[in-house]
Image (tube, rainbow, N blue to C red; front, side, top):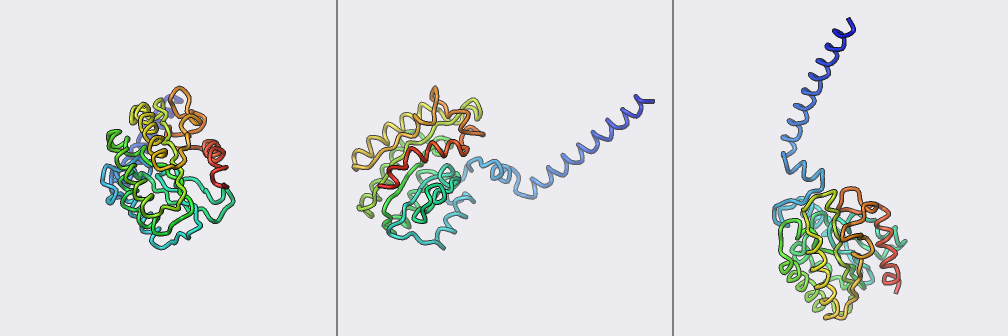
Length: 242
């Protein structure tokens, strides 16, 4: 008798799970299929920057906002966007111009709105998504050089802080990025910073172990937990206040 009841419960459970799976599949399809899944999981889109919903949404918002001359701009991708910098440093001067999944190309195409404001400081971190989408190291460095050249030309009095890009944890995310490429890019960034007499900030060595993003600083192998942002904060605190 007990075995019959168990079989009935098992069959009902399987039926319910199949129904739920079907409902979930229909829901995902109605929300745009794989692009919906990508947006939920924060996986970079394969489209160009100007077709990326994250980019379109954030840049549209930025057009409604202003940057004052004494502002401190944090410019970059999701690693920048996901922190509350003004609260972290208790400063209303700080404005967050990070965009999920952004690349060096995306920054280039939205840089004018920042240089036009002539902010007092810019803390820049960009490039990891270039690697995630298959860009070569030389391509990333070339775009980065253009970014610094534009800022240097259009806003010469702005203090620039070139922050190294961070490694990923390959044990968590697989081989989406080769951290050896990250190291190569950071070496170029250090040279570029010296070329323009900008400050280079080595965050890589402070969040990495054995050339991997420390597991206790991340959940998904790419983005930082609060503990990771604490390390970042301590690394730039003096530069922010000077």
